[in-house]
Structure formats: C-alpha cells, structure tokens
Amino acid sequence: MYFDKLTDILMFRSGVDDDGFQKEPTVTIGSIVWGVLLRTTIVFIAVFFLINFPKFRDFWWVSFFGIWFFVAFPAYRQYQNYQNRIDDIEVNTLCGSCVHFRKDAQMCSLFDEHISKDYIPCGGENWEPKSTFDGD
View 1 (cartoon, rainbow, N blue to C red):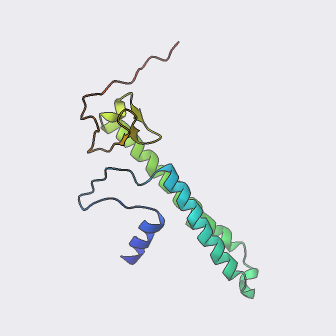
View 2 (tube, one colour):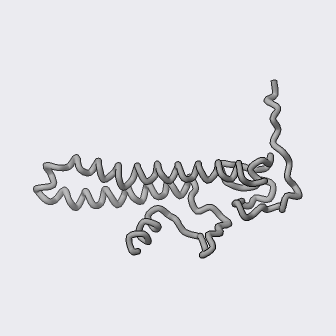
View 3 (cartoon, rainbow, N blue to C red):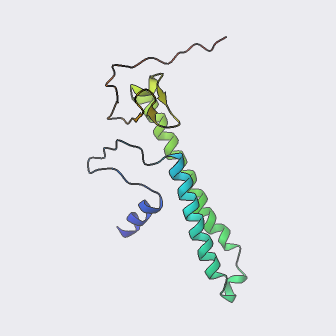
C-alpha cells in the first residue's frame, strides 16, 4: 500500500476520484519531463552520497542501472500510456473526430477545455468533422 502511494507520487498519478472519473489529464508531456528531472535529481543525490563509501567507488557503473530503472524506463512507460490515452480518446470519443481536438494538449481548442471519455465540452453542438482532404 505504501509502495503504491510512493509510486503514484513519483509518477505524478493523481486527480482520479473513487469512480475513476478524471476531467483533466494528469499525465502530460510536461509531467513526464518533470518526473524525469525529479527522479534524475534523486538518483544523482543518492549516487553522490554512495560514492563516498570506498566499496561503492569500484561499482560506480551501477548508477547507470539506477538511471535506467528509476528514470528512463518509467518515463518511457509513462509516455506509452500517454500515447495510448490519446489514441483511445481519438477513437472512442466524439471529440477525437472533431476538427477542434488538439491531441498534443488533450483538449478542445474551441472551448479551451480538456476532454475525457466522459466529458465533452460543447456537448456535441459545435462538433465539426476532420477534413480528409490532403490539399493535393
């Protein structure tokens, strides 16, 4: 239980109520980058303190595993989850097929509000289909 809460804190997962409803996205590119910076700082501080022990100096290369397993791999998994959420919203919601949907911001550009599976800012009234014309 405590490990799950610590993981949620370090992965910046919050904002979901008991029913699983989430109006605003908590995982964005900014939160992924912020998590990488924070976890990298934690790893560097830990390595800085561990390097003072003579036995650890011979195994300095272990810090690369810490960077991979604590920084890079979680960021990669978070980015995959972010992309899956965007793809899911694009396929399964009315907003995903609208010209006003901005997938990089996960929001409706017309109303400047975030969307989710359960929340459509305009209620479907200002929906416009995406153009399939390539311009050729």
